[in-house]
Length: 371
Image 1 (tube, helix red, strand yellow):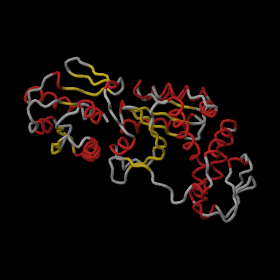
Image 2: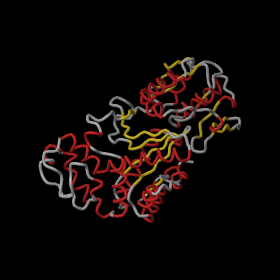
Image 3: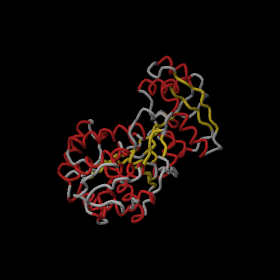
């Protein structure tokens, strides 16, 4: 992301890409996006450092770069950054006014001569599809069955959210009752499922509080199983973000259901990203869990923080939407902040009272986070 931003802000004629074998795929994904976005820019991408922790390998690779090129040393290992910068200054005609790094956390491009250019002054023009593609992610494709076949409607996830904030202790019962529908829909749909604790307005048209109907289609049962075991909160969170954008004209781009590409740099990350939001040059990741206990929410926070490190670093922010009480939500935030060693580890936890306020159209807590 910092490299994309510097290209968008500085509009270079030629970009020389320096990377290691470990980041080759990341470079290829970013280069693909940049080439389509700005076809007039030329690219030289044959600079590979075989060992990014070796000063000698770094210097050997830098020796092939042209004289008096500008240097963006954002990212990379410490060894790579230090020795690339030193070689550039001593052998490639480097000047302080032409070396920079992107300070995403504070929103500046900072040059070595002391000049700071605010990112807000540039037209970064980052679309959500560009943000997804450059990080080896992809949108989850359309389901094999449509919402008309499943019967899942916005009214269902809103009604379920209203029920959940007033019946937090009952939410685990819903998960346990419907887990079989998600994991083994073929078998689970043939047996009775007790949903008598649910209000009727959150059930599909063909079900009742007496239980899941025997003989429901396997695919339909699986969709409802995924919905009842947490999908409802993901749908609700995505809709809330879209509502905030419409109400306050924030120019947000919102996507729900994003996963690593099979062969992308994120391919070893198994979990999906529940909601991704892009505003200007920042990426916001929202992870959802129907848990209400701190012991279950804290791991979700660390998971979210690991994701933003891989996706946007200081340019990304993370939040967890859950059903924790206000005091527990604050306690988890503080524990994670301390455990992650300071401000760099901050993650916002939106609990049950935040969900309740969103249901009533009050989005002020989200506005603070989206600043």
